[in-house]
Image 1 (cartoon, rainbow, N blue to C red):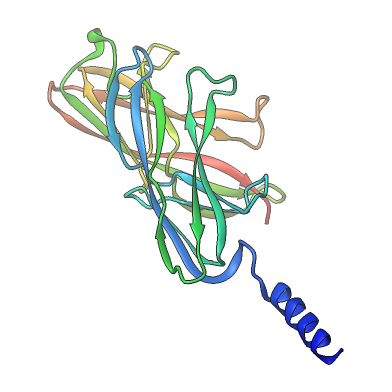
Image 2: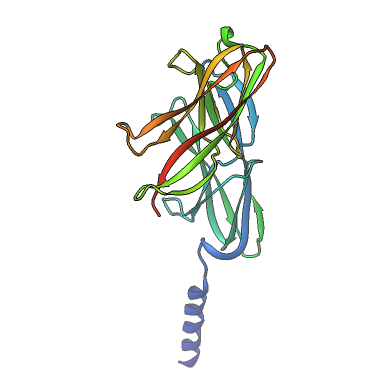
Amino acid sequence: MYRLFISLVAVLTLFSCKKEAGKGGKASISGVVVANYYCDDNNTLLETSNPGEQRVYLTYGSNTSFDDDTRTASDGSYTFKFLNPGTYTISTFSECRTCPKGSNVVSTTVEIGKKDRELEATQLSIDDYSNRACPADKLKGFASITGTLQVIYIDENNYDTIATETLANERVFISRANELTHFEDVRSSADGTFRFVEMPIGDFQIYAYSECIVCNAGKEAKVIKVSVKQEAESVQAGILSVVVLKKR
């Protein structure tokens, strides 16, 4: 009887000490995201590089929703730390021209063993479609326009300014000064900078969409105007500021 009791205690102890996938361990998973940038007009591959500020999600075991998330560094790398042994799914979103929602989930699975400490996940590859670097021939030139996208966080209750910082991974658009439709767009880099290349001589307006306190649609375009006066000129557009409303 005593031996049976000891065996039962041992089994219960074993199950009570067994750790499941999640936080609290000593292991980490690192990986890299690679983005394929396509011209939105003709699906031509423009470049392949590592996107900064791309959100990456972590799912524990067989859970059906994301349990944790992080953003990639400027070189496209990411790390999830302090993980228990178990199975993990790492996911991110990719743009998709044939998907009903315009995007799909790209995932990879990593198994952490009891003695594992630092594991490398399979590379995640995503697609990004825009008009970047593929303007119509009539708009092609040799100048460049560079600027910085800035976000002002506003308290939505009392409209006080919470913080001001550069804004990464947001679309910035450019159009002719006398036209309403943009002919190109880019995403801001990890440090908030954006750059339009192969610009011709002429007047342009650069804009990004901002939340607003008083407006019908809830968003409005914030615009800065620039001019290219020489064929191979490098124009500094300055700071383009947008507003994001937040709760404190």
